[in-house]
Amino acid sequence: MTEVTATGPAQVPEGQAVVEFSPRLLQSPEHELCPGCGHPVAWRVVLEVLEELGLANRSLLICGHGCYTQMMKLSDIDSLQCLHGRAPAVATGVKRMLPDTAVLTLQGDGDMVSEGLHEVLHAGARGERVTALLFNNGVFGDTGGHLTATTVLGQRTKTSLEGRDPATHGHPIDVARLLAQLDGTCYVARGAVNTPGTVARTKRMVRRALELQMEGAGFTFVEVLTMCPTGWFVPTPEGPDYLEETMSATFGLGELKAPGGP
Image (cartoon, rainbow, N blue to C red; front, side, top):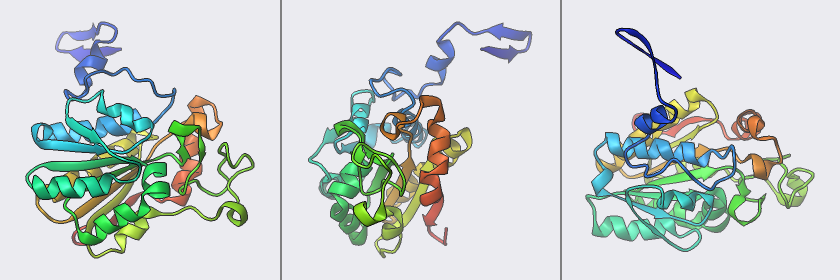
């Protein structure tokens, strides 16, 4: 990799660019997740926003159970882990006791939608002033790669080898659209991390959600579609395109609810 200076191209030592452009809150770029996993990209976006908004020292992450839980030990922010699906309930208590803290929940689709759907819906209905993040890859990756409530029709998992069939498995649940209908929610958006453009757009969504939380506007929610080539049975390089062809086609990207209209 090269960079252009006043005197012309200069060689950047191997690995230096990665270190220089990593968020300060990211303690290590190394992780144990599968090749091609989109979770680290999505989490990097969150760390960048926290740092840019000056919330690093006044934030608390409430984490569920899943592959993404590893993000806790890689990040220099306060965090705690709770029971499956219960992150919104724990976040409610934290925010009410520490109202000036930026409180975020981080859950996967298995944790939030399959196991704790009622928790996030009730938190949204109450208008809790927290920001809920959903990293959605359509599989229970941490426990073997089986079908979740957001697995799209036709998608293969270890418990839907021929693809999700609505007659057998039912239809996927669009939690963002459910939340957008509740009066207590003030911001609901869905992004992705399969292209540079979607990453940049997702970052703007996370930033807006946190800004509104700190303004006391109400419950904010950002869903991020992430890649899981291992759970999808596709080659690693094909993960981004597979996401766009399947998940993005089912769960459209964009702001579903925002102050003044999406």
